[in-house]
Amino acid sequence: MKYCSNCGSPVRSLIPPGDTLPRYVCDACTTIHYQNPKIVVGCIPEWEGKILMCRRAIEPRHGLWTLPAGFLENHETTLEGAVRETLEEAHARVEISMLYALYNVPHINQVYLLFRGQLLDLNFKPGAESLEVQLFDERQIPWEKLAFRTVRETLKVYFSDRRSGSFSFHIGDISPPQSSNKPSNELAQATRLSERI
Amino acid sequence: MKYCSNCGSPVRSLIPPGDTLPRYVCDACTTIHYQNPKIVVGCIPEWEGKILMCRRAIEPRHGLWTLPAGFLENHETTLEGAVRETLEEAHARVEISMLYALYNVPHINQVYLLFRGQLLDLNFKPGAESLEVQLFDERQIPWEKLAFRTVRETLKVYFSDRRSGSFSFHIGDISPPQSSNKPSNELAQATRLSERI
Image (tube, rainbow over all chains, first blue to last red):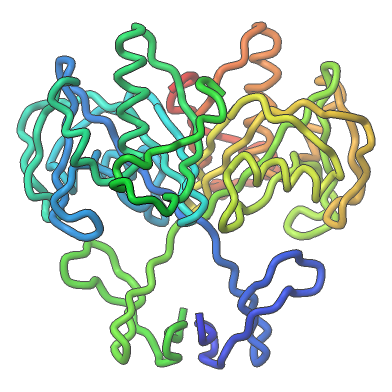
């Protein structure tokens, strides 16, 4: 941020009186511009033991597989956002059954909220941001071609829960990739605070 | 938003190509400025059947009672944010035990995440944003002097869960206050999507 979105004057970064963190502050109009994490809402669309995934047609991670998910918009609920993203990315209609996972991704200022949803029909097809959409059972999941660590972690606990016969809410943190010569998809080191917090 | 925070030129609101919603767009530097909901993180601090509440020293709702809560900051996890807010507002140290409730408040673009936390000691005192902090048992809760409907809803399900002997995660929506002659604290009409979604 370089300029005040309220008056167009240059801003500077300082800790306002009574605050503890630096903010962008406008000397001209005194506006304090707070910057906060964004929410990513998504869905695990289910159909007869399989789940629907999307191959990304956009950057980042063009060509890799993901669950339908995207930024929550103003004026919508998290559940509405998950349903909308599933419709936009996979033209798939779902009925949400539960909030399944929350992942903190603090190094990129994101919080993921992933819901389980039952597909209402099989009339799915790629949306504008997807190259293809496909149902996968556990053995077919393209583990080496997943777009995001949040998706990897979600699928790991999902299939683990399915094998145990009981789905419970999961919460965890995704830490930044560490510098390493390993391929980045080997760096999926989410620290689960608690399996059932 | 009136000016581009990147280059200081005036912005205008339009639906960018490929998008579905109006955004503030800068013609000069082509930046699209997305605006998204904020996360409020908070805590129900527990001690021997009582919970710790704060009486607000700031607007909005100066003088009314709330749970320690505030906006999630960049670079922190939701759990870290809840612990920080509890420390800032009540000088209280807690150990988080579970994510207890998520409330969508779409008309003000907020998502509340409220955790249960065990107080580690009784050395609490008002923080800069609190007039007083106090432990309450259920019969003492100042129901007529609560600051926010999210707090009211959280406390309602919390004490209901306690009576039933089982705490489970809750998710719900808080709808905008309706025009009415009733006092605003009579308008706590959260629609719970599901008691256990």
